[in-house]
Each structure stands twice: as C-alpha cells, then as structure tokens.
Length: 134
Image (cartoon, rainbow, N blue to C red):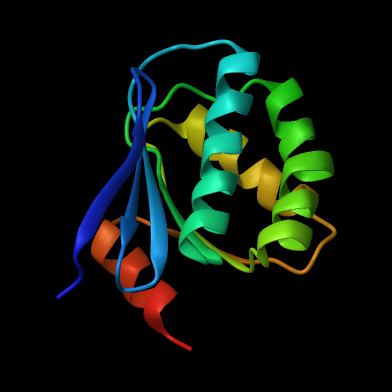
C-alpha cells in the first residue's frame, strides 16, 4: 500500500508523492496563464529532486487544453532539464475527458526527442500499475 504525501497545491493542480516511487500531479479544471503553468512544472521538478523520484503520473481529468507555447516549452526546455537534473525517465498520463485536451497532451509526447518513457491511460490504477513495473 502506497502512502501519499502532499507536496504542493494551488487552484490549478495538486502535486503528491506516492511511496510506491512516483509523483502525481492532479490537474483541476482551472484556466491559468502559461507562466502559472510553468511555475507548477517547476514545482514538479523540485519535488522530483526532493523525493528522488524519476517517475510522474499526470492526471488530466477536466484540465483545459495546454496552450501551444506551454507545449513547446515542455518539449524543448522542461523535459530535457528534468531528465538532466532529476533523471526523469517515465511519465504516465491519465488522459483528459475532452478530445482537445487529449490531443494537446499527446502532441507533447510526439514532440519529444529525449529518451522518456511515456504512456497514456484511462484510469489512475492502470497508470500506477505501469509506473511500478520495472
């Protein structure tokens, strides 16, 4: 049984650490600026470093679609930094309910040139099971 510790929360997201070895960011249906979204991703990176976790579950639910500038920033800047600084190597995305949000998230995966294992799921349990496989 995994123990959960809350690391960060605001109106747009909650970041938790799961002792099964991964971080989870649960997004809320709140529209925020690109700058605010970037700040949340910086908190995710800090949490990776703090807990020594290289795995992330991103739960999109009712999350609004990611704006194109954020998508570009994630693929060209944040993901490469997270890989270099924290050893980030595995991401499980629990897909959003809206097609446009799912498409935006999938465009990030297809835009990555770094070695990051990622997969898309319809449930948190399926995502957690995949993250815990070696």
